[in-house]
Image (cartoon, helix red, strand yellow):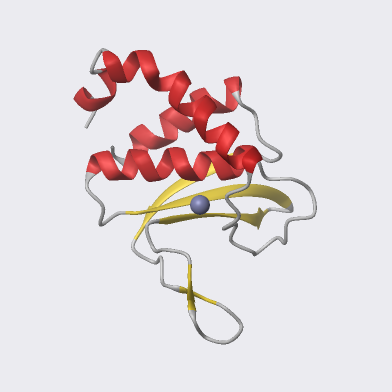
Length: 128
Ligand SMILES: [Zn+2]
């Protein structure tokens, strides 16, 4: 999917599954490896979710690596939107969320069920 298509999907999801903050989606090349305090790589560079402040408002920013093929972009986006859905107060503002908690898993399952009909009918694939 293109960035425009992903943003349209995110806008639909925000109605059905609103998150703690408004969601913004970006395709980006700037997804460098995340490093732990000891310098070891953490997580992956396919995508991430974080809180950014824009004009004083906190926004959940989902970044998806533009180098992925269109179907992978959608799959990573769904994974990351589940992080946005399970984001709770107290997560560090600039911390990427790597916890794949039961709450996150339930959120991702809800998303795949939400998209099941469109996937079965090929609508999602035709959008690529
Ligand atoms: Zn994750």
